Image (tube, rainbow, N blue to C red; front, top):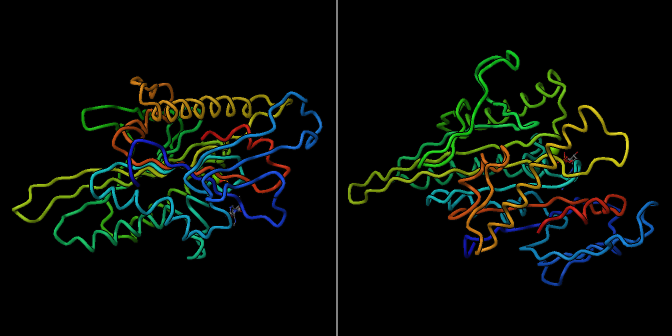
Length: 333
Ligand code: ADP
Ligand code: MG
C-alpha cells in the first residue's frame, strides 16, 4: 500500500457486450481513464458543456472477477487492520453500476461473493494464523437515509421512528455511534448470519418505511481487538474496517422530481459532496481542517478516513454510451 496518506482510487467498469470503446480509454498501465462524450449523445447537451475528462487512478478493473477485485482493493486493507490500521473501502457510482455487487456480491454463488463476505473470511483466517494473539471480532451495520441513522442489526423489533435516535459521539479513542448495536462474533458463520440478517432488514425496512434502498448509505463495520498472549510482548491493538455501499450518485432529473425523491436526492447530493470535499482535503497536505461534521456520513467515518488509515474508493461505472454522460461529470478522483 505504500504511503497511507492518500486515497487509493479504482474504477470498476460493469461488464457489457456494448462497451463504448470510442468513449472510454484506459492508459497503457491502466492507471488513468479518459472519458470522452460525443456532443450529440443526448439531445439537450449544450455545446459549451465539458465533454472530456481524464482521471488518474491506482487501477482500472475491467471484466475483473470478484476474486481479482478483492485481491486488488481489499486484501491489504484487511490484513493491515490486524496491525492496528483503520481501513475504509467505499463504492461510489450511479444506481445500477455495480456498487452492491462489488460490496456484497451475489451471495448464492460462492464465486460471485463480494468484498464483505470475503473480508470476514480473511479476518477469521488471519485469526487462525495468529494463535499468539487473542483477537475478538465485532460487527455493526449502519444505514444512513435522509440524514437519519438506522441500525440494520437492531435486536429490538422495529417500533417506529419514536425510538431514541442514535447519535454520533467522539471520544479520544475515536468515533462511535451511540445506540448502534455491536455484535460479538466468535466465528465466521456468526458474522455471515449477521451480514445476511442486515441485508434482509435493509430490504424489509425499504418496504415498511417506503424508502428506496439505493438511496441510502450503508456502512458495515468490522471491529478488531487484539491482545498478545505472550508475556514478552505487551501489545494491545484495536482497529476497524468500514465497508461502505454509498447511495447512488445520479443527479436529479431535470424535471419532475418532487416530494420524497427530491428530498432523498438533496440529502444524497449534500452528503456525497461533503465526502468529496473531505477526500480532496485529505489529499491536500496544506489543509489542516477537514469538514467531517457537516453530515452523518463523513462524521461517522471521521476516524477511518484520514491520517493513519487505509482508504480505498472504488468508482463503479457503466461501460455503455447511454449512461456515460452522468458518469463523466460525477467521477471524483
Ligand atoms: P448498484 O448497487 O450500484 O445500484 P448493483 O450492484 O445492484 O448496482 O448492480 C445492478 C445489477 O447489475 C445487479 O443485478 C448486479 O448483479 C449486476 N452487476 C453489477 N456489476 C456486475 C458485474 N461486475 N458482473 C456481473 N453483474 C454485475
Ligand atoms: Mg446498490
